[in-house]
Length: 207
Image (cartoon, rainbow, N blue to C red; front, side, top):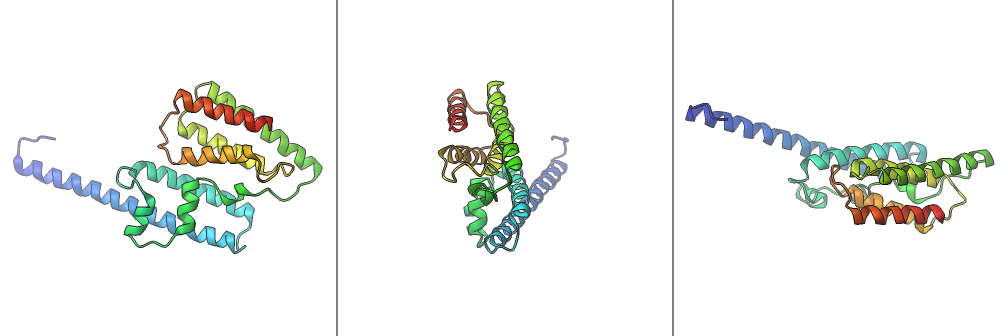
């Protein structure tokens, strides 16, 4: 902004710079708090101090908040682990969870439900598979469009107790979640990536 007055221009520049610096420091503070909170949640889960049904939504919420915040400061914080080292943060479990982009419960099957609940879980999983694949075919290829669909899919798959824990289809979808989690929300998958994701989803569905 040019006001015609060198002194006023300098003052405005300093004010704007300080405003941006203040916003960045506030974002750093939020990131610090998110990492600390996630670390406490992960440790509580490992110690059985929180039930899986309470842990999962809390973890998903923290991951979503982290993703939104990180996307806004990625140019200043390209590496979260370096941020942790700079501020002497001992949060290894949080770093791992936020890097993966999904809760620990996505690695383990849910408790065995009754037959009716199992049938519902299978139906929901099938629907999530179809929704994810149809969305890709309809050119919904932005990260913030695909990631929630894959998250819902994995969550549904974990409720189908007849599926083996080491099923390759589960690993493939979780792998895509981690990959997408590390990308900006606005990033759109290219033709080759969409084709590979569709192939992996169809393979998992058939499996």
